[in-house]
Length: 149
Length: 162
Image (tube, rainbow over all chains, first blue to last red):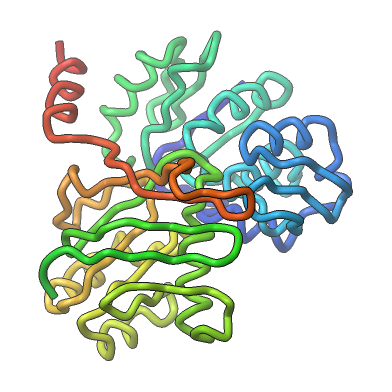
């Protein structure tokens, strides 16, 4: 189940990429889901837990992955109870957020209206209003009603 | 500071080339398009100059600011182009909006958030596009593209309310 909180909230991490750099575990990087997300978002190949092959930057460290993919890995693996700001993710991360939320209860924080138009069977609870939305259109309509966003 | 400024920022692997036309430019878009790489290159060049291996071609100084040094930077820097990455929440504050109003710098702000405190045009909201132009096997070429035009924005808004 995906839960979305618009605006500032307690226990939220505003810039997840920095939090990731200081908390990630090597095994997160080689997890099949991470390998797939890194390939899709960054176009990069995971060579080993500490080496990534980027088509643009060449051989890079994990810290040079995109902010979007770092935030997705935190959503999947971090168990601290923190809520991560998905506004650090581009719209190309939306389908992965939905996919992660199909396997776990995932609460994300947004400071903009992310585009979920390309996500099949999208549903989410908008925590600010308590409303469950069952399509991206319902989500946008609800988001526009929320002053905090 | 007035007018258009052409900027080229490059190292051996990546090249960014774009024009800045207004005092506030917003950059957003998909993940992994090079936004943070761009700001990091500006920051490194400002600290180390050509010893960084980075080359910046621009008629104005390019530099960065962050949450902890922003006031000192704005008090001391004039006639420059200041890049601000998305981790810096200061861009949302009234204090920042008030301060930049009395500066003559241009600002390139990486954010997906709306910044109602700041007077920027939808026409100056860009994404970064990787293209084959000038690119070779070793260096990728990246330029800005306009994300919205005024007409698109109006059409989108009216579609939502009908």
